[in-house]
Each structure stands twice: as structure tokens, then as C-alpha cells.
Amino acid sequence: MNAAVIVAGGSGERFGRSDGKQLALVAGMPVLAHTVAAFECCDAVDVIIIVAHPDRVAAYRAQAVDAIGARKVLAVIPGGATRRESVAAGLAALPDGCTAVAVHDGARAAVSADTIAAGFAALEAEPGLDGVVVGHPAFDTIKEADAAGRVTGTPDRAGLWIAQTPQTFRLPALLHAHERVAADEFEGTDDAGLVERCGGEVLMLEGSRWNIKVTVPEDLVVLEALLHERGEAAGHV
Image 1 (cartoon, one colour):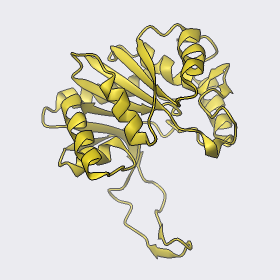
Image 2 (image 1 turned 180 degrees about the vertical axis):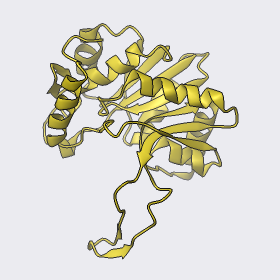
Image 3 (image 1 turned 45 degrees about the vertical axis):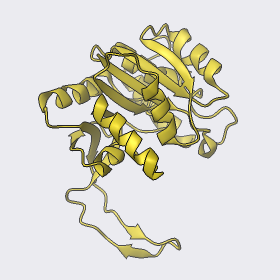
Image 4 (image 1 turned 45 degrees about the horizontal axis):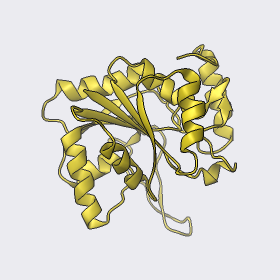
């Protein structure tokens, strides 16, 4: 059984609105509803857990699950104080029988069902893999800088990738990684980093550069244009 954990537990402070970015309307539906719809439509996904801000569980359920008739969502649960804790809560809520899980940012609403399925397919194709990360090569020059903004280095961009989500894992490998890093009090910035820290093998899978994450209000303009271009309007699941 393949599962998805959609992480939407942040406060959305950088977005600048009291109820966060997940319920901001774009192309006729909340951001989170577009994300849920993509996983709902993906044949490779059997069950979905949504991890929400503790104060918004009911609102996310009503506006991003019930409103679009999503049937694969087993639960909308409150998240923790950090992203790692929120993902761990989502993993703990998965039903017995799950063997692989895709972890995805709720604010990456332009993700496609094909991209989600590709992550599961790549993981299944290579038995030695512990995880698959969707992303794309770094086309821009990357600078390293100190706290004052002064450049300290320019790494060779060959071999550098921009990591996105979904990040798809064999469930035992991800559970083991979360248990290990929790004991070490290590947070990390994504789940693949936790698996890598524990010696797991992770593959980069090239995806769409349009798989953007809504962080600031200006991102909604780009997302709306993209969704309209793809013909995704209100009520589409």
C-alpha cells in the first residue's frame, strides 16, 4: 500500500495573512485543495494523511478535503512544533500495510499526479533505493555567503540540484531515520536529509520547474497562471 503525508502544519508567517497560505484562493480553490486533488487523482496513492496547524484542523478538513470530495484522506491531524515533528506525526497515523510513503509540502499545489506516480515507480524499480527526491538541476549560479551577506564561495553548480517534494521513501527507512534523528535532536530541512544522515541511498528524479512552493503572496500569481494554463479550475478533482 502506498501512502502520502501532506505537510501543512506551518503558521505561514512569511505569507503575511492570519490564516496562512494553505487556504488562500487560487484558480477557484484553496492552495491546499489543489495539492490534495493531485494526490487524490494519482492511481499510485492509496491513502492520504494531512498534517495541519493545530488551530486549523477543522478548517483544512472542510475547505481542502470535504469541499472537493477527497475520499483517500484518512485523517487530518495536528502537527508538531517543527516540520520534522509534523512529518513524524503523519507517519504515526498511517494504517498498517503501508510500504512506501510520499511526503509532500501542502503549499506545492502545482504538483501533478504524474510526478507523484513517477516517484513511487522509481523507488519500486530499484530495490536498493531508500528514497527518491523530485527536483531539478541548479541552472543558476549558487553563492555561499556569511551572516552579513558577504560571499564566501561559489560552488560548482555541476551536480547541484534544487530539491522539491514529493520525496518518496520505503516506509521502514523513513521511520528508522526519524527515530534516529529524534534521539539526536537533529531537525534537518527535508526528509531525504534525515535518511541520508542515517546512511540511506537516495535518488534525485528530475521533475518540473513549475512545481513551486507558495511562500509569499506573489507566488499565487504564478501558481494561478500555471493552473489556468493546465485547465485546472474550481471543483476539479
